[in-house]
Length: 240
Image (tube, rainbow, N blue to C red):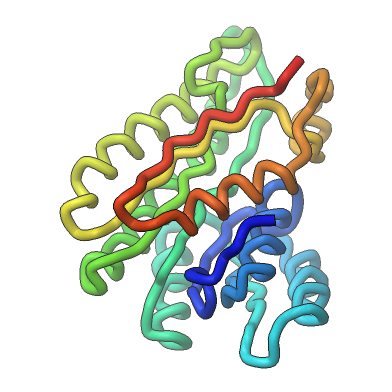
């Protein structure tokens, strides 16, 4: 386990925190001494996770469940404002929310295309802007972009998802170029297949040798804990 001393008392937003990598990230940031906002559409799961985290948190730490639809820009701005109201800062914002509905390009409906793009691309862009606007005022901050190896791995029946992730990757690269002058790190993370319910929920087969989300979360939080003159770009491949 890494030493996260410099993460103590940081204020963190994790979107898509109700399960999978988001849940693992919330737990890892909490372990590092952070105050963690748990955001997702499923409020019931978030409340249960917050209660679980607070059992092991220090007395001055908090886990705050926050119902949030990242495709709604107004809600994203309100979430950022909630962090500012509570703590007066945003140290770390993790754009982790994602969704997938496999479909052939011959059958992909307008609604499916819009939903996949809204969550995986627009949601990330909304979160980046909301966090960055405050971080510019602070002169520092970390924005973690949970992308995917799908950004550069074309697959049949997943054109919409791969394209949205590719757009999100390029957006993140451009954001890093622009925001680094303000002391903001944009950390792109491109994981391969993980052992979560994401594939199952999307109707996909679990990939062989799927990675443990807890292992991936530990690597990501370690990257955030590095000295600020080091900016990580993580591509995490399955060994198999």
